[in-house]
Image 1 (tube, rainbow, N blue to C red):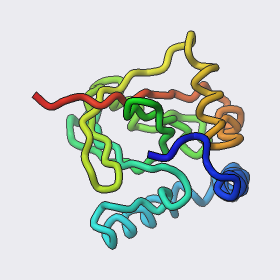
Image 2 (image 1 turned 90 degrees about the vertical axis):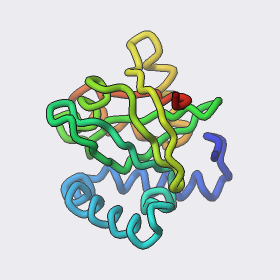
Image 3 (image 1 turned 180 degrees about the vertical axis):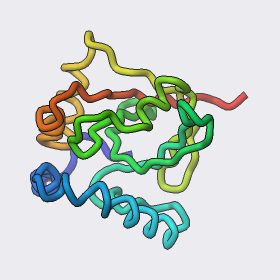
Image 4 (image 1 turned 135 degrees about the horizontal axis):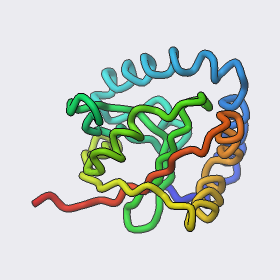
Length: 168
């Protein structure tokens, strides 16, 4: 898995993309354009490549619906941590509401992270206030300026740590 300490050219590209992704234009267009593009890439690559994964580590998160109980899938950027753990942030394109997948994880913390086509059973833990600033610093080393989504949304973004589990 890529480390938060990436090569200089990758950091430059990510910083440029990060700046664009925080624009009003992207926040307005991204929610309707990105999901179909992600689905098309998943279809073409048979689930092994996420479009967003071409620039940043990405996964498909399979959760159980908080209200419906049905399986849901969402493509997300993630920040790798040691021991195979992953951090995911409910930025929701800086909208003022939390994305549904965060409510799903709160209600049903057992989920599956699909990374490069490989399903990994995980247990989600909401990051608490005592760890929040350290986690944000870690995430921003991977994705510079990402916390701008929190400021733009006007809400405290939910951050989850996904820890791989073994299936019984």
